[in-house]
Amino acid sequence: MQDTTFNDSSMQSVGESERHWAAMAHLSALLLAFLTSWAAGLAGVLAAGVIYLIKRNDSAFVAAHAREAVNFNISMFLYACIAGAIGVVLVGATVLTLGIGAIVTAPAGLLLAALALAIAVMWLVCSIIAAIKAWNGEEYRYPLTLRLLR
Image (cartoon, rainbow, N blue to C red; front, top):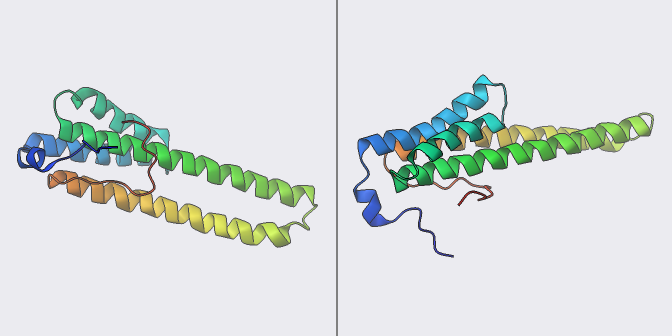
């Protein structure tokens, strides 16, 4: 499949306003998720989604960055839901075995907590990197992102 989000000729003509809007797609998603206490939540999707809806017909550069931010925040939300579900299963297994299952579930829970922390750090760092890249007029593709919005 051909990726038409960015090309060399469009990068040459990215204006300051477009770079600001693109950076704000990433930063607003980050800020709104923090303000609503959602480490990886739907609030980030809403912020970037609003920018995407407003600017998608005006600038391919802004639309591509906003679309990427929406996809990344949806992905992080899904990963957080999966981690939460696994955590519930681990707690349930411990309770159902009257605590004997803790021998297995405690190390698994610690591993899950470390993975959740790593995902949260990746979310924060990648969002900041994406905003900087957008500010500089460069493309950025988030890692581990499900590209649901095309």
